[in-house]
Image (tube, rainbow, N blue to C red):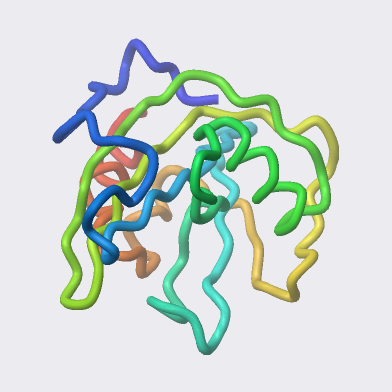
Length: 150
């Protein structure tokens, strides 16, 4: 798991979990899962926003859902396993042309072996490989921090 003390936690703003008054705002949680100096990443499926990009597993919070509950639900749906959710290590809001994504990244540990339950590509990527993959623009700062933290 990432060492939260070695990563600088960045919080652009403390925003409300729900979309609030802006219907374009989407709250997303993501699991940063590290094992043997490699990170678990999945590839976004065709037909979804940012299709083809690599990402840390997770997804959109339902209205009123806590970040932890969202992450537990999303990991069960995407990876067919349970997850132990640790500290939030990075948070930011990123504006895309059609939406504002409020991202919350948590250090996590899997309770079982992951399985790509939605048919998505899934792989363990070494720290040195992270910057060679195409991640969404909102993930760039976190990817740089993780890649350089060796």
